[in-house]
Image 1 (cartoon, rainbow, N blue to C red):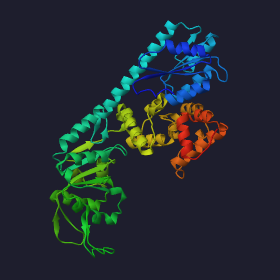
Image 2: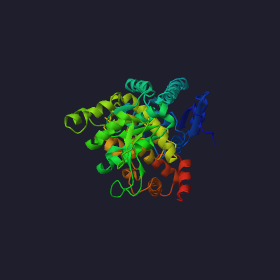
Image 3: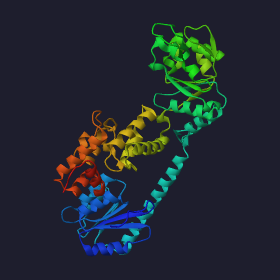
Image 4: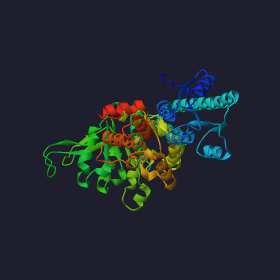
Length: 470
């Protein structure tokens, strides 16, 4: 068995049922930095494609068991970025047009001139190497586009990063605004880490999750017997955050009665526990965040104007994801790395059509929605490349449904690839593999092709789930 290709090499799979042609082609196309794998039948050739992820496939058109056109379709389903060249001694304009329409990079008439073939393959190898260099540059760029855990390289984000740097050493109160899911909590954490209070606690209160009658006690604490149920003295979050930062998320949901007491605490840096007459000094930096329009809330008498101006001495707005779509690819790569590690999978990226689909989406749920989409896809994907069928169904428009359906083809269980809260990732994967084996009559090679994974990967999963196949 030949060794696996290195990350910087280009892989070429040659499929031809004529052993003499395989020897001639593999010798003629040999060059430094190109790993060549050969197969004398289309099924073995497809196994190589699924195992090796080649950048280029060279296949004969007429072969027993499966035509080169079918091989082309399977390769395009697996990875549309693969360059496929078909060769045939039975050339026709109709079949050439069909091949190009189905995604072939070229269609050559036999006997093929070795010089011509070297030129065509050489051009595709150069293009594959350019793509590899571009990917490497993008990965290096991604590494330099993270600021205190926030990923972004758009002008809007660099402007926000600059503002955070300038504000962090000096703020006492900050207001962070932005739509739900845009990352306001990450901005708050960045401010804390870059502030002089970084050695202190970072304390969080979600104002939308607190019962109105308990707000004052949560923030300022209470003494024993202050109210029914106060069986012991309790420290509030202001005291708990002394010397550090208190993050008040969704400040727009705080009741008016508590807003007045919060304003006093911010103005005088002191609090009173409920039921106590003694004031206690605190040294706390406060970051408030909201997705609401506080000016409208002030006009409707739902938010105190004086508290707003106290909080908004400095205001940071977190942009919507739809306003910085150039960051989507960076975020995708970051989330894929995160969830691949979390699920113990080797996921290397998305197919071009999956990238196109995500690029067209307007992301009303912002970064949180994108994170959920990638998390779902990493859980669903059986191979190492996320395709349209692995994404949540709500992202598929009518055209994408057709694409995903045709991509799934005869794949068992593809229609059931939506997440089920009662089924674990392992149960879902085991079911798909069992269905593939049943459809393939126990044949491991065919089951691997149905699942679009390599035979070695299938054998590992069979052993993992104690399944058997021929």
